[in-house]
Length: 223
Image (cartoon, rainbow, N blue to C red; front, side):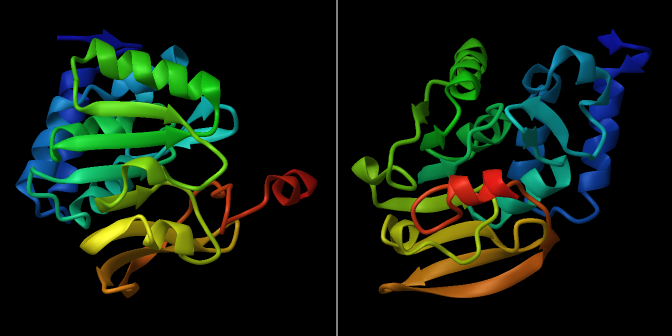
């Protein structure tokens, strides 16, 4: 068994999944969490904390999300296994690695080249061949491969960007944090024709979403 700083990682992971099981009901999501080594997606200095149910810094003022939030957002994508999924905000690549076990084809975009390059390497080393990591372009999302059966946004926006609604397929699901820069409400949207039927999933806190229809980077830097 692997131990770091006195922490047995296998035991810590099993304990985390047992805790998640209290509120996460999708067994496929729980199995993906069991099979994904979160310690590989955090800085070496934080690996003893990998299975604590907390977010952790990963550089570039970004974080790897709390495992419960990862599981919750994934559950509400309602993936069955044959979906094309878009992730906005690759970060360390952990969420994409979870999605790779649940959907057919995962496209993930990241604004920071350093994070994108490291995530791409981690995903490749894990043998996850159905994930493509892109450096984000000027348009929010990745329109070239739209429409998507599901879209997950791992950064907070003031409102659901229309440009992402347009990239979502009919009956597709989107999970996205909506609110202020510092506090958001997690939303699930299901597309009906050209609109989303939106439900609230509870409070959350994410870094700001930067791009068209979201926060402007200059505004973030000024505050």
